[in-house]
View (cartoon, rainbow, N blue to C red):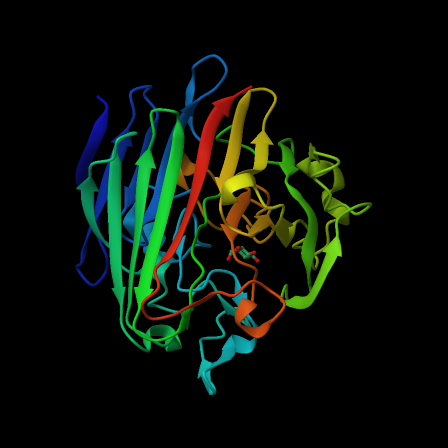
Length: 352
Ligand code: BGC
């Protein structure tokens, strides 16, 4: 039945209850999002023969999420991706954040990073499909960041078969904000993503150092293994040339997206030949982190007993550039009091 249902997804160790919302659209697509981390836990889409599969990595209990995982399906904030040495200066004051990805800050930091907190949820009316709004109030100083911040994300599973995420945030002190959804996709719902084909609408990328922190340089992708614009390619074909430290070889870099007409564009297309599934990513964001699950090592067992080995899933995280607060040449990520941060990203769930 099309619509939204709410159910219990268990409890955290603290006893706090976690709910899960199931969105079903008229075409029978299903998305599940839980209040812990406003996390996308399942996404069921048809293949070319109409056969459904869950194309997102994740776990079947909240205990497994709480035990720790690399942001599978999470809403990541206040600042997704890396901030160099966990430090930035704003209004003459230097702020210190957790260096949870030594020597840098990653994905909002420690226990109060937004993927690890419980968001409030309410079913909302949207003209184009079933929707749920998640809200979180982050106190001044939480994870070292300045300002009381009210954040929200509305997930809508549209009748056009897109999962849309609309983010908003306000603050009472200047603060960097950079939100993303960290879904790991596998269009077969099993195996690895090495056989998936990818297009990215970018002619350049932000160069990273050995800890994946931007050097500040923006380099062209042409004639590199990073070119998925002039040369859409099978992900596995050039993977060994993509960089990374042994054994974590693979893609893990931020693309500088080509600006779309009206500020909103299709920025990536991921497809898989045997199922015919095609995922199109649309966004208004300037950057996209492309990550091939290089750090997955088979120690986590996900839904249905699936062992998450290296390259089990692919992340295409729409965002601002990493470490923007420390790079004046990158688009600003500072939200000011009185302003509202707004951004949207859509996963179009198509078949070829
Ligand atoms: C980063 C990776 C990181 C992964 C999981 C991605 O967004 O680019 O370097 O390992 O998140 O934390």
